[in-house]
Image (cartoon, rainbow, N blue to C red; front, side, top):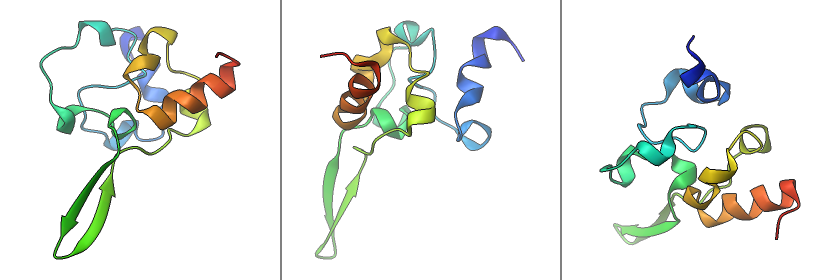
Amino acid sequence: MSSKTDNLSRCFRFERCSHNICPLDPQLFARVGFDDSDKCPFMRPARATAINGKQFTTGGSVMPDAELILVPRDNVERLNDASQKRWRELNHSP
């Protein structure tokens, strides 16, 4: 495994993940031109949708702590709000 994917491979979803934009990617700053469907679910904001009169929420979930502690500081702002908040709690950042 290359050093470029070492951090990504620590994610519990790595083996079955098909997203091109990952908060564990140390080269995330170089990734541009992708829409929400290409992003890790932990980077997507919560979005409510009504289907046949029922409300569904996608995105906005908190990344598990085991993976969250691996997110490089430079990538934190790309996480969704709930994951950013938890990252700061784990890292004692304001």
